[in-house]
Each structure stands twice: as structure tokens, then as C-alpha cells.
Image (cartoon, rainbow, N blue to C red; front, side, top):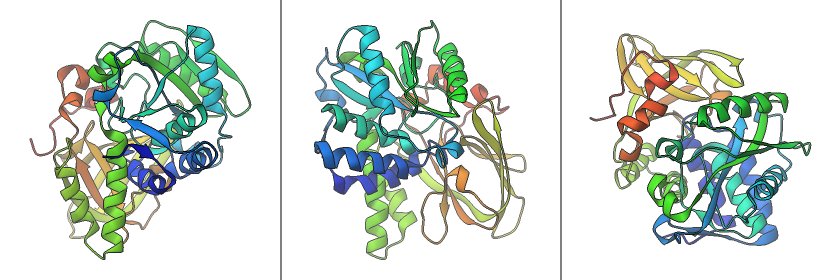
Length: 361
């Protein structure tokens, strides 16, 4: 069991976070650099399991908001989350005692490591998405009753603010608008809760899961083993239970645009063996894989594009014509498949016409 996140864990964490990011979540490489600098300066970060979290511990979740494509050019200073935490603490009148990612994928798996190191706090091995989702209300925290507000939001220019509202959806709408005004990328801290609540509403073990995914891929590559096989076998040992390759082919079209602060579009993949093309709809993350009238995988299950030759996950902002990809699908844990959860981040929440059918169910 991992008890501390050290410099040696960061490459594995970033790689695993890219898989859990399902194409979105922001490039974890940037967050990895920020986390590396913080650990070098302040030391390793204690990683605490949900079951070991004291009931009264004051937990705050955090991460980045905005379109992943913007993160490529709008680099964080490393001070944004510290400003957001200061703003939050000043508003609520107490000190935060533990940090938790609100998202398991992409940059939001690594920037919480940075702020935990900077402030000398433990990191909770859990999150509220079990992957990456594009909207602030799409959290198990929200599904199971934790208020999203207050939300502290900050950018690299030192601008910051507090959002107070009665609904997570309204918090998303206001924070998204501010993020757009901040240049399309901002950093937020919200969903404050105590340890007892965190145990009830969080997806457990996702920080160590990301590290395990990255380690599995790295060790398989170093040992000249089948990386895809190793990854699928690893998922079978976790609470994600089911993973498989649902298609392989060549990227023949990428239609992508910015809309309301998100990167949205459709990726078309021509199967190697012929047949109808696969089309993946994206809203920051990969939402659904369709082939003709068939749905091969759909949100909230994970859909990740892996390079055929290297098995590296490909982020949506880095998709290009001609790339050869495997399409990996992974079934999410039970806490994310309840009727209450599917109402918040199932297919209909994204305007998709399909009902959810879990991979392998």
C-alpha cells in the first residue's frame, strides 16, 4: 500500500491519470512538473485512505477548470490553488486539514499533490468522479448530498473570488463564466466536507489506482510484455472490474471546437479490419463510442484512446489525423452506476439519446 507520494511516483501517477482522464482532464504533464517542484521543496505527501480519515477532519477538494486545449498554452504559475485555499479558508473561518482531488483524471490528479505538499497536508486517496468529467456538478459528492459551494476560484494573475449558491449546477454555470473571463483556465477549491462525509460520498482509492495504472504500463514496457493485456489484467483486480479493447483503427477525422468553455466535437476512426467507422463524441472527455447504430461504450464508463504502438493514452487536444489507436473501455465502480449518479452524469445529462448500459453488463 502506498503511504506517501514521492518523486518516484509522479511519472506513474501522471500516466495513469491520463488513462483515467478519458481523453480530457487536462495534460497531467504540466501538473506533474508543479507537483515535482513542490515535493522537491517540501517533501513527500502523505496519502491517507478513506477508512483511516478521522470523522472530524476538514477536507477540501480542488483542481482545474476549463478547456484542456487552453492548458497547453496557458501554463499555471503554481500559486493559483494556494490563493484559492486562502480565499476559501478566509470565507469559512477554519483551516483545511486534508486535500482531495475532485477528479481522478488528467491534471487534476497531480495539482492536488502540489497543494498538499505546499501546505504540509495529507492527500486523501479518493475523488468525486472516478475519472474526468467536464462539469462541476458531475461529482459523487453532489450526487450524495455535499454542497458544491462555497467555491473559491483563482487564476495565474492573482485574481480570485468566492461563489456562493444553492445548487451545484448553478455553481458550475457561474464558475464556468468566470473561468472564461480568466482566459479559459482557472483553479478552484470547493466541496468542503468532514472525514465522515468523505467516506460516504467519495470514489475510493483513485490516487493509488492512477499510480497502479501507470506502474503497470511502465513495467510491461520495460519487460517487453503486452502492455494492453497487462493493463486489462490490472483493472480486473480493482473495483473497476471490467476493461476491454472495443475497437482499433486509424483516426480519419477530428472535428473540434470551443463551445461554452468546453472543447467539443467528434472523432472518426476507420477500423483496421474494415466495416463502419467508429465515432466518438467528446465534451472535454470521450463520452460515447458509436459504430453505425451500435453503442460500444458510453459515459460514465471510461473511453480511452491508446496509441497502437506505445499504448500511451492520447488526450483529445492531441488527436490528429492518421494516428493508429486502440479504443479501451472500462466499467466504472458501483457508486457511479446508481440511478442517482446516472441522473447527474449518465448519458442523458450530456444530451445523449442513449440509456446507460455498463460495459460487460
